[in-house]
Image (cartoon, rainbow, N blue to C red):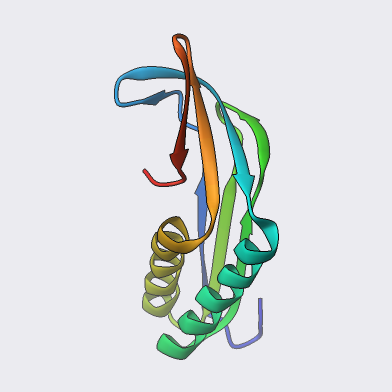
Length: 118
């Protein structure tokens, strides 16, 4: 946070208990870490260029996660809420499209590898 910030928008993504009507038992996230970190820096840089924001935090976990656990957190501070909300939404949407993170969804009838998209 900075003294100029009038608001902080935070997105916290959690592991759901179902996907497309199927019960999710757990998720396993993998990433090509050097490229993932580089891409997250690029996303933050573009957000700083597009909106008057002061600070950005982007964190995505890897490894095995259970239902209810948190794989992703994004926080954006800005003088005004509109910039924080818009930048935060841009960051999560772009992260899901461009960052090399994959997830394995485990169901009662087997596992499926998918891109980390909704």
